[in-house]
Structure formats: structure tokens, C-alpha cells
Length: 474
Image (cartoon, rainbow, N blue to C red; front, side, top):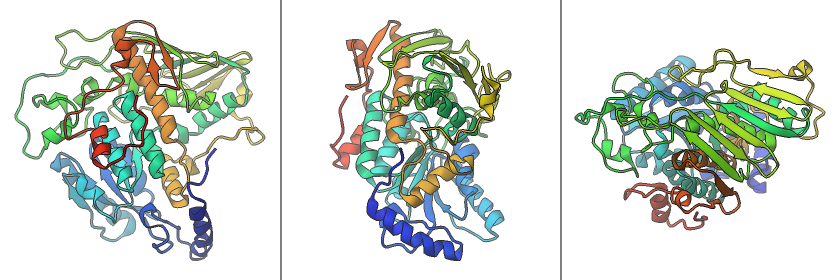
């Protein structure tokens, strides 16, 4: 259920909305100055991270909504990328608005967080920077859109969810399948019992290849490499550890455990989120995991998992299997039938692996009538993003001061399943999980719930520096 964050805000917006509608202009009440801003003020957004996802997904998502928001600043540790983003945004607005819009480019994102004109940030950085930037942005009074996965560790994810809840920041994560018609249909059908009690869920994900060039290289003059490494250990620079210096191809950091967990988080964050939404287990998690995987040998620079199979057990009796041997998508199997849902062969970005995708239908079921069944009479109605647009859903949520389609807690629980699967792969033995305490029954597994932070970086260091201590430690 989606609730207003503050009743006073809701009433103010309701009154202001009538006036705005009369003049045909959207009502935008930025969180930092609510009650002081005039109705109709555009949401001022900054883009943090100007790489592949920023250019292909996140900046375009806001640039298409010039009546609701403006991108006024961009930041990247690689100043060359920040400059390209500035140029791209300014050219886009010149074309769509027929006027010039000045955009500031930064190499130090902290300058953006200190800017009171910025109402919200979009975070499209490498995975190892997600949690810290969300924490810092929320504590600076900004609303947040962040790419998945939410965090590098389960401990970080718990901190992020607690900070966002405490600050009442409007949050959205890049789980855009929640804003896609066939996924909403599948989840609502499953949640309302269209296939009876669900017994098994089967999820197929791709894998990334091994390889990469390990030769040390000089750090480019435009790149603040030390800051880019963030809370992770100090290691020498090579392009295949970071991002391409020419173009926006698939970056090497996606395939290194120092910065992420591989496809189990890369695509797993999407499909596990949908499985949880369909089951109604968004605020909890499994009770056991049994994971196996192969890993590249020492000849490969990139070291994330290869082929894998994960089996998860939930307290509701559902068994979930995740494997690269299955088609990319989600199969729900119940007592009275089955439902299959996928992207229909579409990749997240142009450079994504496409293995096991081309034969997939977007929606299929044991009862063909379910594909076009009227869902309006269902007792449980799931959130439907306006115009099936994920970024627009976030913008509207900010305008109305309500939850977007994905909550911070749901994002944390989804990421937790990805990461506990990764932990299971590394240990190679069955593990029990307590979704309330967020701990394993295994001391070695619990040691992997957090990672050391390289000072002064890291989500926990950021929270402590800001004096925020109201979070659960796991």
C-alpha cells in the first residue's frame, strides 16, 4: 500500500494542485523547501555517474519530462564523462525546449549535495558507490533514484533502508520491470490466486564471460581514480578494472568481485524483485539458500561467478530456483497452472549479454485468457506506474510526496537475496537465513554480511560523519 509521507504535505499539495491545474502547469513541491516554494516549481535534479546507464537510461528518463523536472547538474569522477553529460543535457533541452539551459559539471559530487538548489539525485555509478551516495544524499535532504543493486553488502543495504525511512526521502530504484505492463499483470494475477497456491518459482539469468586485461596502466589525467575506488581496497589502475576511456561499452568493474557480485545481482535484482512482488514477500526473505557456482581460473582477470544454480526456500513453502541454464525470465508454478513473464528478449542496455533471451515470450500462461483478463475486479491492486514509465513514477511520487513503485525496504530485501546467493556460491554449502535478524546460521557466512571500508569512504563512514546512528547493525 502506498501512503503519503506527511499528511500536512498531502493537504497542501491537494490545495495547490487545483490552482496548478487551472493554469495547466504541474505542481512540484521540493522536499527541502516544502511550504516555501511556489506551486509549479520544477524538480531540480542532479545526475551522479555519467556512464553507460546514465546515458542510456537515467538521463533520458528525466529529459523526456521537461514539464516536471530539469537536470541542472552532473557529476562523475571522470571529468571527461561529466563534460560529455553536460553537453548532452544542454543539447537535449535546446532541442526540446527551444531554449538554452545551463548545466553545471562536477568531478566532486559533494559540491552537488551541498547545493540547496538540487532537490533530488539520480545515482548511476558502479555498484560499490550506490549505498554511500544514497546515504549521503538522503542525509543532505535530497530525494533519490539509484540504480540496482542497492548495495555491495547486506549490511550496507540495511543501513540504506533505515536512513531513507528516517529521512522520509522519496526513493526509486532502477527495477524498471515494476513499471512494465506484463510484469505488473503477472504479479497481480499471482498475488490474487489466478494459478492457485504458488509452489515453485524458476528464474533464468545470463552470465558474464571471463577474461580481461590485467596490465597496469597510467591513470588518465581526467580520472580521480582514488575516489572512484571508494571504500574498496587500493589497487593499481587498468582500464579493464574500470570503464572504457572511449565510448560507453560494458565496463570491466561489472565482472570484478571488488566492485560487485556479477550477474546474480546484475540481472538477479530485476527478477527476484518481481518474484517477491508477486509473492507479497517484499519486506522479508527466504529462510534457506543452497548455491553452487563455477568461478574463473587464475588466467582470468575478471573474477565474478560463471555458471551457477541457486535454490532458495521461503517460509510460505515456495522453492525458488535461479540458474543460467533457464531462459531469461520468471516462471511461477502453482496448483492450478503457471505464468511466465520476461522482457521478451529485450536487454537492459545495448551492451548487455543476451544469452538465453531470444526465444522468450513477454507473457505466457497455462490459461491463454490470463493474457488479456480484466484485472479491475481483483481484491489486491498493485501499483501501476503512470504511462508505464519508471522515471515518471518517481517524479510523480516526489510531486505528491508518496512512495514510488519500489520501496527502499523492498529494494534491500531483493538485494539481500542476490548477495546471500553470492555468499552461498563462495562457501558452497547449504545455509539457513533468519529474515528477521538478517543473519545466517553459519559464522563464516555472517562474516560476509559486511566488508571493511577504506577511510574516509563508505556508507557507514558517511552515516557516522553525519551523526546518523539510528540504524540496525547486522
